[in-house]
Amino acid sequence: MERVGGVQVHVRSADDLLVYLCAHVACQHIYIDSLRSLYDIKLLVQKHAAGLDWGALTSRARTWGLGNSVYLSLRLTEELLGCKVPESAWPVLRPVEFNEDLLETAKRRVLEHSGRSPVVSAVWSRRSGLRRLRGLWGRILVPRSVLAGRYHLSPDSKKVSLYYLVRLRDLLSEHGRDLFDLMLGRRPRREWAQRESELIAYLKWWQ
Image (cartoon, rainbow, N blue to C red; front, side):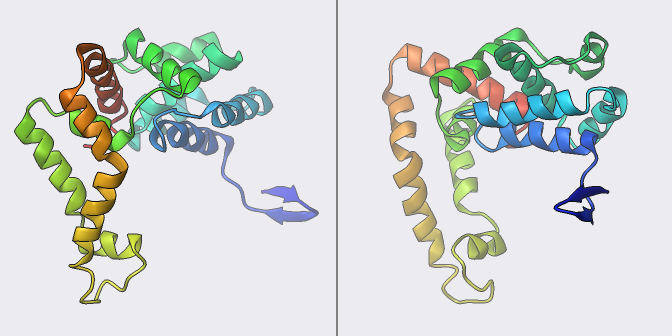
């Protein structure tokens, strides 16, 4: 409980809020345009430095499938904003599969606003053209209830089926240029797309 505006209210624990903030900045836009969100992480760590239980926090994050996101978000906050995470916490937080190239890719997305959408990077991470098409098809054929919610329809409406065509149009409008650019692009673009795909896979953004 905390007092807000003279009223006692329920709030998340500092540990849970830190996991949430780290996961949000990692998974919402894969770090593009995220300095303000990283600064929120820094402020939380500063305010609750003495009370954070790094072992319990890490265990909970990994149980929720967010351990990779928490570690990389904290590393970015340290590198770019000077966030002071205790040295003893890093060995606990660090995932086995982490490599420093992932940090550099994420930093570039933060600082240069450079990168493609998570959808495009996730589709491109598939190793063959057929798998990429299947991945894109999976983005189109989302569950009926999800599609209805996205377009503010009743799940029982007969119009829902027609909106798969609308979704295809919207996806092509939003991401088609990037996908075609990658298919026809030069080697440096494809190499950067591959690095982004590795970041997507590390964050487990799209299984």
